[in-house]
Length: 412
Ligand SMILES: [Mn+2]
Image (cartoon, rainbow, N blue to C red):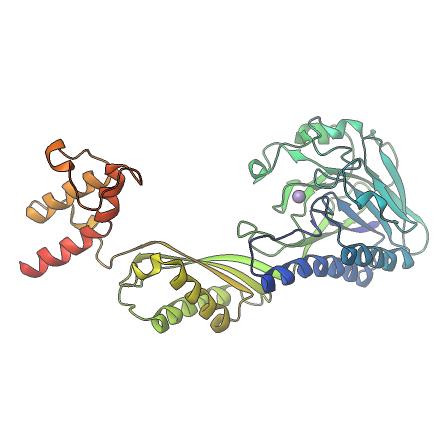
């Protein structure tokens, strides 16, 4: 039997540009911390091997801190006689620029950084042969051919693992990634490996059960789109039997998005913070047991008297700061563009009265319907160097529907 930890897409030294320095520092450290946790897990579980299926690094940048950190972590594995296999991906190709190639890999770390397969024996804790791991890597940043064809057909009696950073057609979320080293499930299954340790697509998924084909997803989420727990796969392989694969969450920071509606009566910052807080509390409760540092995107939508105030980025920033403190988050990003006036004019557009008629006209004008030439000219405040006439009209009429509903219903 062979036991190993399969991880991929670590993206060490991701810059996290555009975030506040405090958040950026934490996110950069979190990526390293996730890797350290993977090493802890490998040692605790006494696995035979640790497999990194590409994009260990994010790019050319390799900080001194990461260089020191990485060799120290790998040495912990090697000292415990855990075989380490690392195949390069499109973010860290063998011939890429930068200092990655000058890392002094500890002895016992097998690096596949090109199309020549690197075949490594794995021994169990008693020193007995437990299986084989065969890897190919990306030689350049733009591998457009199917790298799986470079992998030999194994014929051994022992469990065989293939390591590959590639985009398998039809995997979920693959369209979000560049088409590097594209391949098909059929191509992979044509070679009798017991387990395909894939990397590249950042969403964890099982593409095939027996033989097993898995993406572990990235080790630590890096964007709002990478929600949910992130980590590595703990794998047990025995010849002729289905692989036992267990996911272990390792990334210390989690990214999530919550939608907050029902703000029709909220008129204060306190009220807004309470509403978001309640929603977040419910969300956490549904995720019972999830502990993390949270990067939360909060989407406010629906009617709210504060909708116009929240068009101002300064006000949104103040709300975000409040939420970070109140909800104990690493960071909060508030999206308020979907808020509108408390009254939704769309609920009244089908009325067979004056109000309905006015709203329908308004909707058409907001949709870009041309105004009669005679009234289009000489609109105060319109500057054709800044915007088109329909844009100008739509802008000044923004929110007018709700106001018209309020006035016309009040007077009726
Ligand atoms: Mn990646």
